[in-house]
Length: 198
Image 1 (cartoon, rainbow, N blue to C red):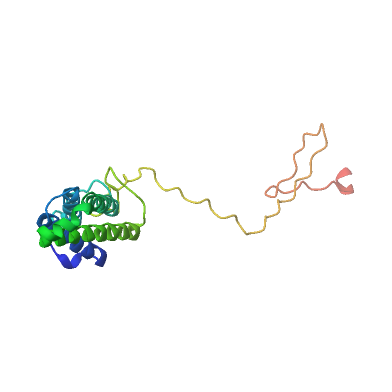
Image 2 (spheres, helix red, strand yellow):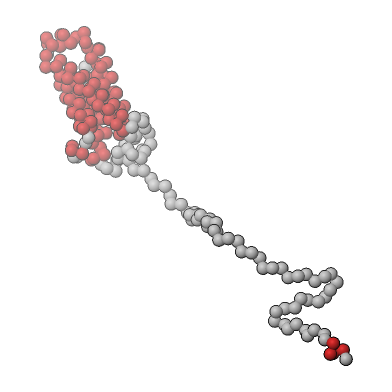
C-alpha cells in the first residue's frame, strides 16, 4: 500500500474518512453517525483495495463508488447532527471531549462527501455501477476477438494511358464471292498480259 500513489483529492478523502471514523468512535455512535463511520470505511476500501490487490475488480468505476459512499457519509452525518442538536449543549456540559469529537466527525464527513464529489467530477461525471468497466481502477477490459476475415484491398486506380486505336479493318468481299483477300505471306498471282493471249 503506497500512499504516494494517491492523487491529491484521494489523499484528502483518506484524511476526511479517518477523521470521520475517529471522531465517530470517540464521540460515541449516537444518531446515524455509525452509518457515516461504516461508509467512511468503505471509502478507504475503495481507495486502497486496488493497490493491495491489483486483480480485485470493483463493482463499478472508482469515482462512482466514491460519490455513492461519500453521499452516505455526508447525509448520515448531517442527519445525526440534526437528531442530537437539541442535546449538544448538554453534551458540552457533561462531556466536552465527546461533543467536540462528534462535531469533528460531522465536519469531516461533510468534507469527505465534498471531496468524493470532486473525485467523481474529475473522472468524468458519469455514474457507472454494476459490471466492471474499462477505465475503472482494478478492472480489466477484455480485448475483442481477432477478426478472421482478411482485409479487403482497394481497387486499382484507373489507368491514365490514352486508349489505343483499333487496327484498320480489312475490306469486305462482295456478297456471293468466295475469294479470300490476299494475305501478306502469300504472293499475289501475276497479272494477265497481252503476250500470254497469243
